[in-house]
Length: 112
Image (cartoon, rainbow, N blue to C red; front, side, top):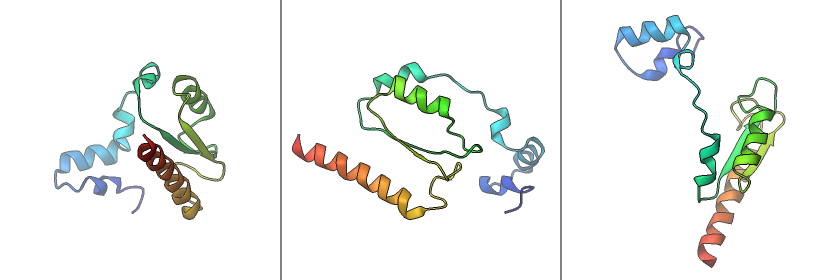
């Protein structure tokens, strides 16, 4: 998919949506960040946070520190050679981390 056609992801025939997406560069530019860090402590389930460590990754070091502060029980994994798509460049590494996390949850659930 070319950079000029990201609206195709919407799978819509609505040309207004298509033109708006193409003109504005996507929904991201129209969205607003909502700070909910303080709410993370309410999560009572295991959490796995996986991010890329490259400078162009969305998960920044400051975010990692906030997850550690507000959700100290979370398992945090940063793949230093990944960007936003954390399954690249090493898909098996990604799958193994998720599998290991889920197996740990299964063991905890079965032992309860």
